[in-house]
Amino acid sequence: MSEPGGVAPELLALRQQIDSVDRELLALLNRRAGLALEVGEIKKREGSVVFRPEREAQVIDGLKAVNPGPLHNGSVAPIWREIMSACRALETPTRVAYLGPAGTFSEEAALGYFGSSLVRVLCASIDEVMHAATSGAADFGVVPVENSTEGVVARSLDLFLTTPLFIIGETSLIVRHNLLRRDDSQAGIEAVCAHPQALAQCHRWLSHHLPDAERRPVASNAEGARLAGQDGRLAAIASQRAASEYGLHVVSPAIQDDPHNRTRFAIVTHPSRHPQPKASGHDCTSLVVSVTNRPGAVHDMLVPLKQHGVSMTRFESRPARSGQWEYYFYIDIEGHPDEAHVDAALKELRSVCAFFKILGTYPIDVH
Image 1 (cartoon, rainbow, N blue to C red):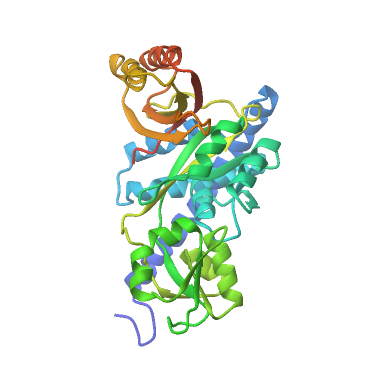
Image 2 (tube, rainbow, N blue to C red):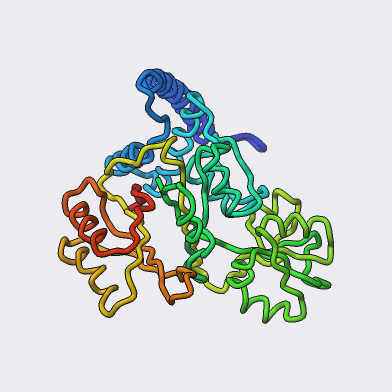
């Protein structure tokens, strides 16, 4: 029994053990960082890249496979991504472009994928993100490509056609929209500022709770939060991170119409700065194709995938804007071109397409 105001002896003993383990962990992390620096020197001599998404995926998968608990496997990936991020930063800074300002979901996706030890290149639009990654102002770009409620992000898909960038990774983020404001009240809100997709994802909630408020589209949710921080008549739809960044109250949490709302982000880079990731064992290949406008053309396009046992996980169409009712088809398939059956399917698919472009091959998180 502890004395009044004191700490129980058994609790004190446990805290001392935790302190001891923390010191051991710090020593081991510094040992790991030293080994990473040695690896970095070898990579410099060989001229190879620092960041290898397939290698990091294999490290995390290996740790999950041997994890004895009680730490949940869901916690392993974010912990080790931070460790690997800090080690990479010792070798060279990683510049990552994404939609700003601070506090966007794109920022959250970037930090979740690369870890927090990165150089942040904040951009005003998806076009700017792509330009930064193309020009070399950033090593990588993070762009939204699909939302579980509103579907594809059309601008990102269109830009994949016109830029040399390719996808080397993906990350999926649970999107929880919050109503933010300077005052902790819904009274007197004249306008709600947010990205058009966020406004659409909260349509029913806004119609029920703020039917008379203007819905004002802005470049990003974080930009809406910035504006709400300057004008008490405005509210924003944005993340908890944005609320902290701009000193706003969370007036109403989780106002999205779909409680399972998720957004998928692609990690893009220029092929001159990063090679295609090698096969990791659980990969996705993304491509965009078009076929001539004739009967059965789309069916013929899909036959090679079936014949070679390749599973298609995504199929989207976008107008080609040629005025001829032609379309581009965005397809995700399971597997890597280094696998024989995938390679054979892609070669046959290419032969029946008028346009064929592999957008990237990358490891996916299988949890």
